Length: 113
Image (cartoon, rainbow, N blue to C red; front, top):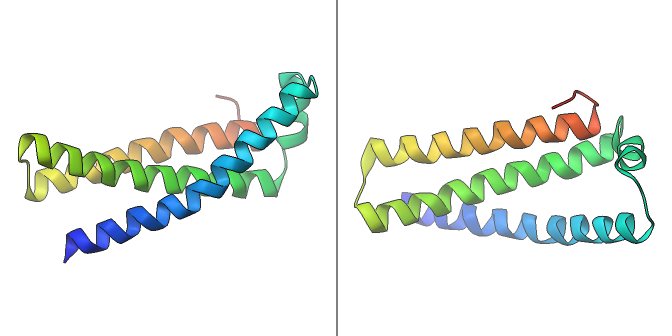
C-alpha cells in the first residue's frame, strides 16, 4: 500500500512541477532576451511573496519527487528495504529541501547564500 501512495505522491509532484518548470523557463528566456543583469533580476524578486511562493512550491515538489525516485532506484539496484530505505528517502528529501529553501530565501528575501 505504501508503494501505491508513493507512486501517487510522485505523480502529483510531477503535475505541480510541470507548470512551474515551464514558468521558470519562460521567465529565464524573458530575462535573458531582455538583457537583465543579475542585479536587476534580484531587484525584481527580492521582497516578492509571489516569487517566494512560486519557487518555494517548486522546491517542495522537486524534493519530494526526487526523493521518491531515488528510493525506487536504490531499491531496484541494491535491494535495500525497510528503515534504511525510508531513512535514505527522508534524508534525500530534507537535504534537497534545505538546499532549495536556502536558494529561494537568497533570491526572494535577500538572505544571501
